[in-house]
Amino acid sequence: MAWALKLPLADEVIESGLVQDFDASLSGIGQELGAGAYSMSDVLALPIFKQEESSLPPDNENKILPFQYVLCAATSPAVKLHDETLTYLNQGQSYEIRMLDNRKLGELPEINGKLVKSIFRVVFHDRRLQYTEHQQLEGWRWNRPGDRILDIDIPMSVGIIDPRANPTQLNTVEFLWDPAKRTSVFIQVHCISTEFTMRKHGGEKGVPFRVQIDTFKENENGEYTEHLHSASCQIKVFKPKGADRKQKTDREKMEKRTPHEKEKYQPSYETTILTECSPWPEITYVNNSPSPGFNSSHSSFSLGEGNGSPNHQPEPPPPVTDNLLPTTTPQEAQQWLHRNRFSTFTRLFTNFSGADLLKLTRDDVIQICGPADGIRLFNALKGRMVRPRLTIYVCQESVQLREQQQQQQQPQKHEDGDANGTFFVYHAIYLEELTAVELTEKIAQLFSISPRQISQIYKQGPTGIHVLISDEMIQNFQEEACFILDTMKAETNDSYHIILK
Image (tube, rainbow, N blue to C red; front, side, top):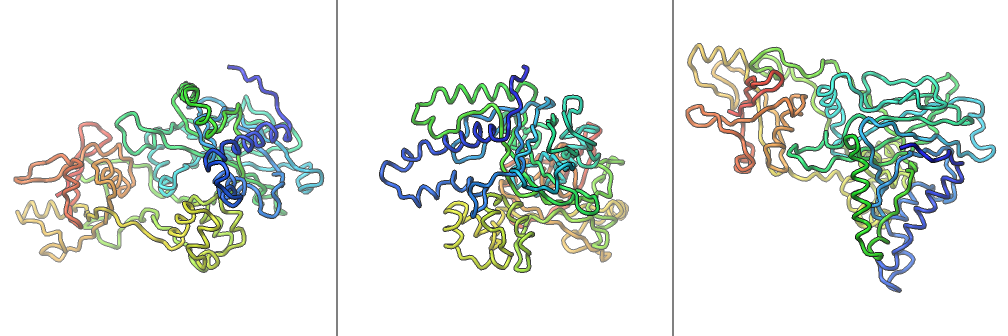
């Protein structure tokens, strides 16, 4: 379908998008709280006002952002007023993003006549996936060799200069552009949301992504490192034509709702305006090992070398905890808020250091952020962890020891070591859902491989039989049970069976 949209001026975009969103957001407030049953403080505490507050500095609510980015794809009509917009995209389809210079006269004169650099990213919206982003992308790379998550459709793009795509960063592209000239970049997203869904039984909801754009200007050394502006929006990616079907389904559902119910939802707009956010933190991953691969038919995974000596342990996975420290600078505190899904409040805490945030009481945080987000932020500041439902310990069986014991016909002793004084190192696995799928994912994460490469997991039973692991069996595991991990090549060339002994 050909686009019938002309390139709008920045003021037109604001009028047609932001103002309409805001006006639509105001409708239904009285119905939600009841006529005459609310005060101004109650209204200002609504999430929609928090979103407005997050995108504008407290001391200047009429601030005009220097740049504006418009994704030419319709927003979903099935999004509630206080929620962030959601846009559906088709896998591999080219979508235009218009880069608009929105500066006032005399603003940022240092970039007049100069180029700026914009970095596009497709990242995970969910914090759980953000923690394991490197492993998720490595697994995707292994299953889709030669493919990229994000690409620029260069022939269709206008005004972009020196577009680049780093082969090691599948989800990132960058280019230079002149704010004084018309610039439109067409992007293609090649992954789909269901590829990163935990369970693979069909019919699961796909995970949401974020399209984020960070723009930088040149410093005195000619490097584009001085941050100017960042904005992002939430998307879901479907197989070809799937986004159109999902949009139609959402529209039909909304048409069946009563007028009173419709007032609680945002209208769907033809374009998506990216909202201001914190810059994406630069994290460099060093990958010294090749993509997951297997060279032998037995014990191909490796948690260590030889007998599992602590001197030969691989790099541990990224820590799940991300505690804020009193020594954290205001800039690092901003990044911490972004990583922990508190981007909405980054402007409120612009000059807060780690010590400043940690001094806040529970009532302080709730008063600033509201009850729901306030409790969540307070718990995150105090580093409160939820205890796992089940903890088990696993150790990889040593090839050399197994061959030695088979020759000597001696039983294995893995609790603390063996008769020859061999020392074994165990790894803890924490389970929350107590399912076979979760156990598969945790073991795959421990081995730094894709869960698809684990065909089945068995538990060695009486007389050496192999019993298929089920959810019910895991629910009956004893707390802090110890297992030896053995591997066997599956029927297919690229997958393996895991045996718990």
